[in-house]
Amino acid sequence: MIDATSIFLLPNATFVVELAVVGVILFLMTKYILPPLNREMEKRQAKIRASLEAAEAARAEASAASDERARVLSEAREQARTIVAGAQATSDQLKAESGARAQAEYARIVATAQSEVDVVRQRAIDDASTQIGDVVYALVEKIVEREVDRASHDDLVREAVAALHAEVARGTNR
Image 1 (cartoon, helix red, strand yellow):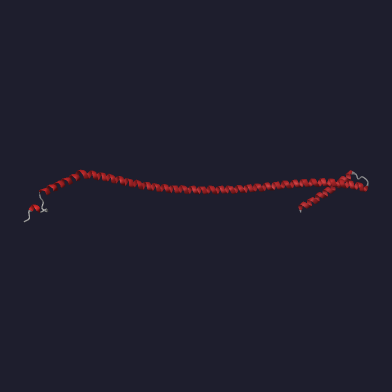
Image 2: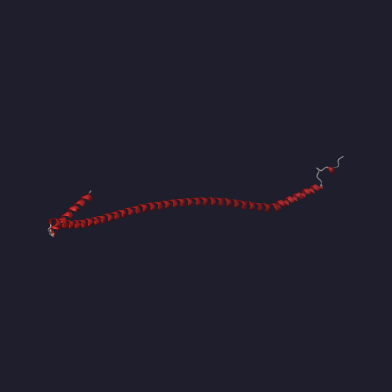
C-alpha cells in the first residue's frame, strides 16, 4: 500500500510552516518594503514627467526662437534691400545731377569760348580794317599823288568798318 507520507500533494506540518513564513514575508513586504518603493517610483515618475515637460517647453522655446530668428533675418534682408535701393536711387540722382552740372559747365565754357572768339574776331576785323585803311590811304596817296586829308580818310575807314560789321552780322545770323 501507499504510505501517506509519500504523497507530496497532501500538506504536512512543514508545508503549513512554510506557508505561514511566506505569508509573514508577504505581509512584511507589503507593509514595510513596498510603500517606500512605491513612493520612490512615484517620485521617479514625477521627475521623468517634469523632465519631459521641461524638454517639451525647451523644444517649444527653441522653435519660437527659431521663428523669431527667421523673422529678424527676414526683416534684416528687407532692410538691406531698402538700403541698397536707397543707395541706388541716391547714386542715380548724383549721376543725373553731375551730368546736369557737367552739361551746364560745358554750355558755360562753350559760351565763354564763343564770346572770346567773337571778341578776337572783332579785334582782328578792327585791326585788319585799320591796316587796310592805312594801306588804302597810302595807295591812294601814291596813286593820286596828293595827300588826302585825314578827316575824310577816317570817315571812309569808319564807313568801311561799319559795312564790314554789317557783313559779319549777316554772316553769323545765317
